[in-house]
Length: 187
Image (cartoon, rainbow, N blue to C red; front, top):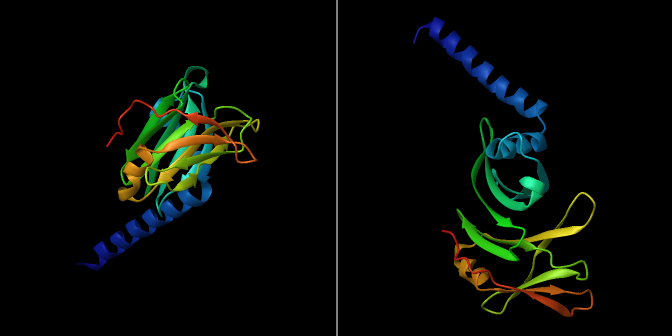
């Protein structure tokens, strides 16, 4: 390779690396994630992001509400690439659904609506009898709105798809069993 081509190649590498570093330093991650979610649904859709859950070194789950009057709650999986965040997959629940479960790549995910403000936590009893606690999400006003539970072990997917879900008071009293949906898990 001639000296001229080595210099040109060196400049291209320096410009590429410099551009990548400057883009990542100057652009806020949250804004970049919101921009990607907006790209998926269209720029005229109102989106309210509730939570971002890191599920790997370069993957996240974004929990947000969108649509006419914000009636769709969505879980989207995004992957970090050299050029930013890219939408990989996702699913939504309607405001009428009590809970839903699915598999996104190597993740088993269950989400649902909060039944009422009278409860303290959401408990998940897997089909093997193990008791787990779901993460509760609040909106901008601090109202409990949705909950989610993520399983990263492929062998545990069936455990949550057949799980019983309970709304529990601070005293440990079960005040409601959240109905199992009719949907089959999406693989």
